[in-house]
Length: 124
Image (cartoon, rainbow, N blue to C red; front, side, top):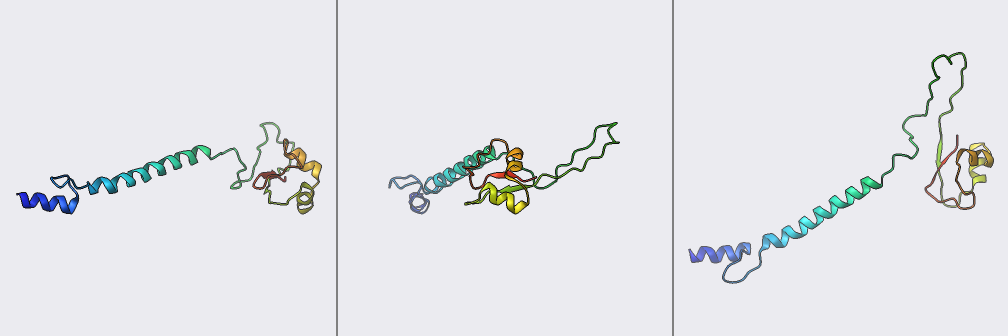
């Protein structure tokens, strides 16, 4: 019996007379820590994700109100552009065949002198 206890103590690091460390705890503690950190990162990432940005999967289509079928309006789907480093409103307007004034009307609150890369800019 004593021999079995010594073997278990040596092999698995079970506490015994030799005062060995517990191997299970030595490996389980970092694994539990990584699991907890991963869970926290996923929770924070999910809360930072915003659904208010532009939706590129489906074009924006408006339906006429009942009784307004006599008036037909052409619905222009919204188009977005992601600002790159070095872009200006003039260059973006020229690229998409519009004017800077139209871009400013479509994007209230955009400061023409401080365009941040990665910002979504409405083109149409």
